[in-house]
Image (cartoon, rainbow, N blue to C red; front, side, top):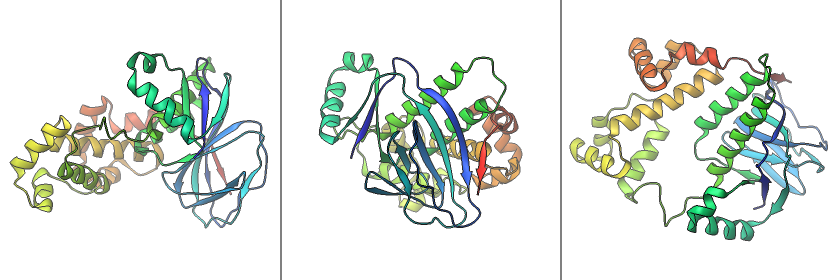
Length: 296
């Protein structure tokens, strides 16, 4: 795996961003560009080749295309392909590094909090799958909205693009087994993954306890001790993350989205959303509605 190390003492220079959609089979043209391009898969598979490496960019995958390097589609994608794209320039120093160099830097920063706090570089793999696409989706939609709004200070776009790149870099870091995000409990880990997969279902603490064959009170206590929040709170947070992604990235009505994330009662969903986000679902959507689309 190769990484792009980017100096961010100055923000990245935003150039353009948008969402690509194809209604039929489509192959990416052969080209060489003078900027970096981040491609984030949303639907279907984009088949891309760069420097002899072939990538299948599916939903949730991130590909970084390099300036001055030829890239092209090596086979057609089926109809219904959707991906986000962002073009930017780096104002600071940029280097390409390998796995061993990245490991050394990663260990050094993890072992020294002072150095970590002073770190002013990003390391982004050329190809990876982030851990949490909902947050990246929201940041990208915010960037698109800002890019297609009348603004007086273009620097806002540069800082927003840098924030997105920072989020990608942080999510690209593999989990350090010596410093896990929560206590290594196999049952809780399985429950967390099950909630992620079934976030759109009508989930309850009792239902999940039954699914895993445990007493609800026991599982709830174990979950809170491990995760720092109770099971029902975690379920709600996952549902709100899914709802924000749908509000920013689809034209579905609030009622439909409420149903999509497992809330048959639209009014209850709106109250809960407002509690967590301090905005109504419609207000959240209206805040980030501007986009750039290119359709083939």
